[in-house]
Length: 430
Image (tube, rainbow, N blue to C red):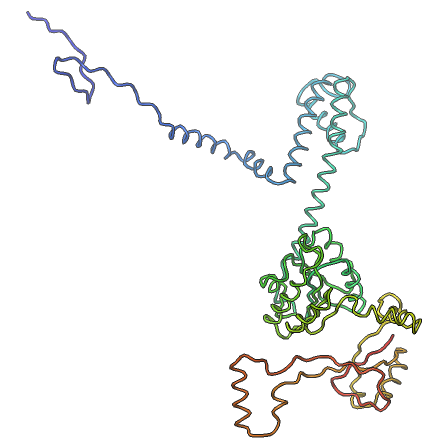
């Protein structure tokens, strides 16, 4: 009887060698690094998927959130240390569940600087922890209060940044900011109610005090450069009535006021909204000519009348002081332009002077006359209609402006029989 030796059957998929021996089994393959990283990433995702971890990480991204987390951390660590050193004493229970509540109450009262005194540490270690919490809370609470205040101010400014362009019409836009602007706003407020939009790059703490400081002005704020078309459109330039451009000192790069910005802004405004009146202030007389070419309606040059005022101090003492009092808004006297009652249009200056004296004790100084610009249509009166139409078509096709802008002419000290026209306003001293 032949005995056969039992051999283990080869594993599935294994091929025996020619001599019948089973080849050695290959070791299990190692997990590639990419798979290990995938496993680690999945683990991290599960970790960060916890709501408390996710919300904590999101909160830590902001300055306000980081301060809040530090305060909460100080409360938790401080209360646990207080219980650890003071457990079993008069004020804190030896039981953790009860004692940690007492310690947390002590920590809250201590850090809020209330200090009721109902819970007090008696050990040296507990008092050192309490002293550290007091000193730390003074700094943290101050920073927390300042951060909250800055966030509220920033949100208030941000609300002024987002304007409803369709709701604005006939408003005044002030481009730029410098040290004279508070007096400008005060004078404008004294003249009556008005909607005003500020465009500049001044810091929040500079602009914010002026947003609600003037009773008759509703002031909105757009932060940015007034030479950018998008910023002007955000301030509803197409619906504006007036634009005032001043030497801008709101940007750190333009501490002295870049007057090239004034010229560029005037050109852009007149391109976007030709009907808007542009009043520009420049520091140098030679820049006034550039603004006139840019079609600014009025140009104010700094120190333009300094020589005349100094000469009048010598030749006519009192006259410069009278002018200064008339121009100041807080002296009780002012020069104003007022509408003329309809029944006096077509009448004489003497009749209007009597009416103003009897109704408001106003002194008539003269008239502001709104005159239309002189253009090609006025120059081509008479002659052949065919010639006039041909010339008009050629001029328009060449892109040439056919008329000058409307302007204000001043008539001072009119004669008693001066006839008042429908385009007149009265210049009075109140």
